[in-house]
Image (tube, rainbow, N blue to C red; front, side, top):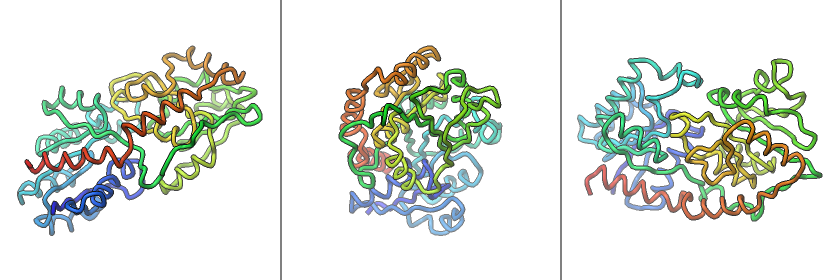
Length: 337
């Protein structure tokens, strides 16, 4: 029996859903793996019983509490697997998360945790490339996936415009406000487009009052519970999910969870032309996006083939029930099996 402790800093957010919860399902899939999840605030309790585990899995360690937990694990002979899904040693100044990470002390801690790890996993190939280039150790890639254990199957066809009106959904936190801002001139009132924004309030970006181009839109704060977020996605039945991302190294390292979520909702994903969105319908410039929105407003484009191709791609390569074998393989590597 392999005993695994997985440390989480949150019990119900995207990181928990895509990078922590899959470990619990691995324990269900494999009787030889016993997985326990420990909240970050309970690391002192973990340190008291650390000798009872074979592997410590910790996500994006970046502070002294993380570092001390890893150090203690290594002292007791417990193997450490560090996991990342963002380039936390390369957050651009325009990104809202930069204030938390762009400090010498934080970056030194990230580097020390990286060096202490027995094995490293990341969510995308580009992120693996960056870590290998910067830190000299090649991580394994374990993609973020569609949780088919919980969410089940996809709609058989994509959502169509209702009464000629297409619903376009943008979902994102404050850290993506800068991405959205770059396309503010294109986000405007259309006769046949209904704009929805979930997460960060978009007023300062899209409202005509603040220099934007929208008179009306719909806004919804983030759901506190991830499963309810997915329920609401299905209920909204968006025609399209809109994913504008500035083309830089940081965003190129990001995974395509917005594409996964859009497809689950029955929507076509409209995304910037970045590596992890190669199966979405991509745009490169504001002009591209403007032309695309004109076609949508005129109901002059059919994305059925794009949607069905996305479903097929996810079923082949992005189902948790299949991809979780890579976590089992990572455990073998970290234990030297």
